[in-house]
Image (cartoon, rainbow, N blue to C red; front, side, top):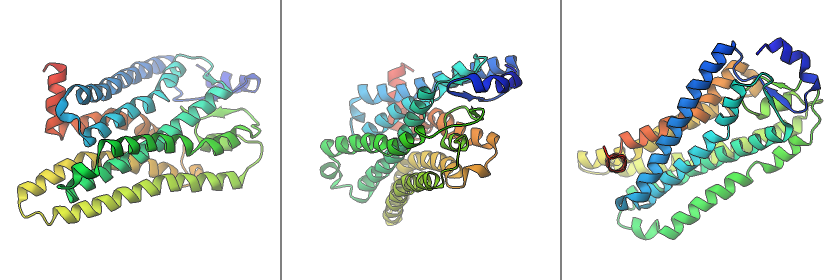
Length: 311
């Protein structure tokens, strides 16, 4: 694809143009193959965890039920961006319709919001298991676990619709070219006919609340967990507690580290290339890595996966 041709014809196109990763035709095909493999591996990895939890009776506990739901979420999170990205690699025009852009915008941020809430309740589950081990079965009941899972999905999908609808009603001027591989608020707001500082401020507030409220819950849970762990007299007991929390802390660090870099500093300060790389890491990289982290550091999960895969 020749970018210059796209730029010249963009004013006649209804919708937006996602530039993605501009390069030669051969480079686009190479990227298509690479991300196709990454997408398939992500589906297989997270799907294997879901199947392992489903078929192994020993994993029918709140911790693993939450993990299976988290893996299900990761499948849809990566699906909200990668299939369109793959189609874009093979397209000459790189066009996404107006409605398609805002649907992707909504589902990408709603699924990301749901992930924030899931990480928080998974930390809460570890807090109950380690700090209240004798009361854990009566505290984290199946009913509570189900309510927490449903609440995550409902809150996640109700967090962003109002601002996204407001942005979709704005007037867009100029080339309508988005130098990104997905419909992101920063590039979209930059294309509006007039700056809307109130909308930008409101978006910053709700994004910050979404990140900080679950993050504070996670940090509070693990502060109490660490305090309880250091009171355990045996080194073996401390190691077991740390291994139980290590996988989740690694996932939290990867996801929150990249998301905060992206959204807690003004979007305009990031170069387009940096925006794409950071977004690519938390939207495509972490769903690929998470199954590896959870399976490698958890003996029960590793055994269930080996049994399910027949290894």
